[in-house]
Length: 549
Image 1 (cartoon, one colour):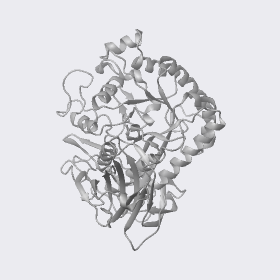
Image 2 (tube, rainbow, N blue to C red):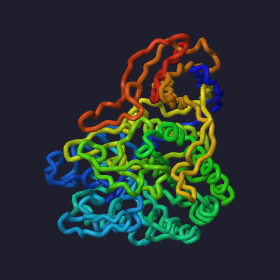
Image 3 (cartoon, rainbow, N blue to C red):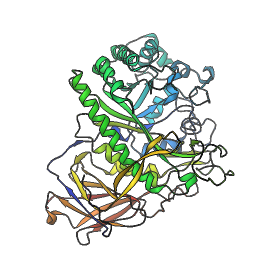
Image 4 (cartoon, rainbow, N blue to C red):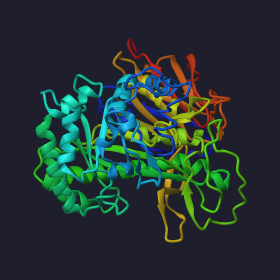
């Protein structure tokens, strides 16, 4: 993309080439993530036994929140990753099957919570089936035999002790789980089963080989890394690359608005940092795969990513508020940079989060022409913990993020078209995600941040869909689309859907007001001087019918 700085004008031109598609977006990039024992993802979120809002009938869905399932189903979700996350490293799947009252309660060493195991493999797989999503199970990669047994339990077609156990537990037919993670962040000493690159490469090879002997149709995701990438990835591809379909990449942004009061510009700009990191790892994996003699490189799974809401550690610990945000607490003013920071898991999502997330999705779309594209993505989290869906005892609603996924998943095309933007921008120091200096401050770098970001796609019905982000805080920008180099070929009207056009930058949904931020169908909008007005701090989709033009 090219961007011209134009501080005086608020017009942007996007040139789209419809004759040269770059590739196709996988539906899996609109996937999701759930972690057990993690801030209401499962218990109090997906699963809430005894709630009047939950399924009371016997069966695998007993205790599942109906309102949460309805919201997730309406997203038409991609693969949902479970049981973590860090939780995965200590998880034993056999604790979570069979009669619920017979299952053991365990200490969770990842988050310091207690895992009841009342929501286990069969419950999760029944729930993903209920909401229309593919399951993505992640094994710890600490025990090959345990991994093989898990695959056999879920997928075996022949009559074995484990397939009979599955039938006794309520599922006659195989679950046919296709996506499996071979470990989670095993490069980190915070993981049970932490390994060096060479140790993990050998373990991944052995796990993958024998898991595939049970079911040769598995798609396996190996552990990629966001730092020291070559020293980790080279031995992994040399030893296990032939068995891995994808490599994971975990990226986290960070915002300070909880104590600074306003971090909008830094928040929305961090998708540029994500795009740099995604492209860097994509090209490295392609190079290393070629040097390792692989016929084709693994693809990328951005299976953990989000914007973290940071706050000072000396504030009272945040708790869930009944209306969907943070419970009331006494916090003081902050003078200077805090001495310590933590993630506030109950902070509500704002329009800044929504625009950042849309920018990351655009970055993912633009990888489709790479030899190593992003073909799955799973933001943290789907339910609660700053997630897309917010659940409380009194009900559930979609956060600001929910409506970006609904807009893009349902209203964008899947064939990516080249798009170049010429429009206003700013030069700024942008945080490099949640990466800290020794002083504790966020690392940053100077970047040119375009106000307008466009992802151009063609839908299966032949229409062209432009996803448009206007990052400007308070000014509209007129977008002038030019298709195939012909200004006279732009239709006179377009259907316009928008998120955030009628909401403040700091707006957030709540149980009392669940529709402050939502997808607004503005209908068919006529052009004015060859352009369409894109509201400030908004995410829009314009649909053009070029047939006959």
